[in-house]
Length: 436
Image (cartoon, rainbow, N blue to C red; front, side):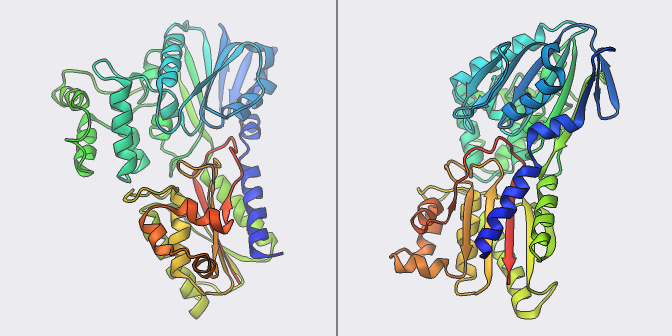
C-alpha cells in the first residue's frame, strides 16, 4: 500500500472510534422497571416527563443512540443541526436547521423555541441534552439590547483574527441568553448533558459555550479579548455598550455556580481519535509517536515546527527513526490576509509542503474530524515531497497561494483534497505524518 492509502485507512479507523451513537450507548443505560437512568456513576429517577434536546454536528447519531436506550420513554424532543445534515429520528422529535459557523435568523428562532421549552419544564422533569461541536453558532439568542446582526458581526471579527475558540466562546457567552450556564439556570427540572468535545482539554465551559455548566469567564475577560485583537472599536456600538454595563455591574454576570442536580460530562474527545490513529498506524508496522494532543497556533507556523521535527527524524533519527508515524491532535487557527478559500488544515498542509519540498518518503495528512475544514466542502489535504513540484508543473506558485489564503484551490487542482462529507462527529483535528 502507498503512504496515502495507509493514511486514508488510519483516517477511517480514527473516525470509526469516535462514532457518537456508540459512545452514547456505552455511557447510558436505563432500568425500565425502576424508571432509572444511569449515566456513568450517577442515577436519575424519572418521576415526571423525560425530554430530549440534541444540538450540534453529532446530533443525529447521538439521538439514534439515546433512542435505542430510552425509546418511547421520551415524551418530546428537539434536534438542532447545521443545514445539509440528515438522519433518522422519531415522530415526536422535531428537527430544526440552523447556520454554522456564522449564526442566522433560523438559528435565533430555534434558540428562542429551545429557551422557552427549557424554561417551562417542571421540577420533576428530566432533559437529556446531547451536545456537540457547533452548538454555539446553532443556538444564537442575543441578550436584550443587541441584535443577531451585532452578534454575527462580532463573531466574524473574532473568527477572522485567529482568536482561540475559548476566547471566541467567552465573548459569545456574554452576548447570549443561553450560553455560559444560563440554560441550566432557567430550568426547574434536571438537565443531563452528554458532550462530544471539540475543545482542547475538554473544558466543559467552552464546549458549545457551556450552556449548562458554570462560566468562569467575565465581562472583564470579554473586554480584554476584544482589546487583545484590536477589535474593541470595530465591534458594533451596542456590543460595546453591553460589555460596559457588564463591567460596571449594571447587568448580571453569567452564573458561576450551577445546582448540583444537573449533570454534565464528556463522552468523546480528540484523545479517543488519537488513540485509535496510533493503534491503526502500529498495525501497519509504523513506530508511532503521539507528539501532542494540544496542537494550537497559526496554521502556517505550526506546519514549520512539524516540518522541523520531520527533518530531525530524517537526518538524525531523533527522537525516533523511520519507518515511523507522528500523530498530532488539536486545532490551529488562520489569520485571514488574502481573499482565497481554504481552512486551517489545508493551510497547514500547504505550508508544510513548501518546507519539505523534494523530500522523499514523507506524507502529511491534516483533516478536520467533522468533515469540514473552515468554509469548505473539504476536510483537509494530503501533501508529500512532490507536492510543490507537481504544482509548479501546473503553473502554480505555492507561496502565492499560501499568502492569499487560497489553499483550497491549490489542492483542488492537484486532486489532493480530503472530501469525506459531514461525518456527524466533531472532535477537533488530526495531523498524521508517515515517514519511511
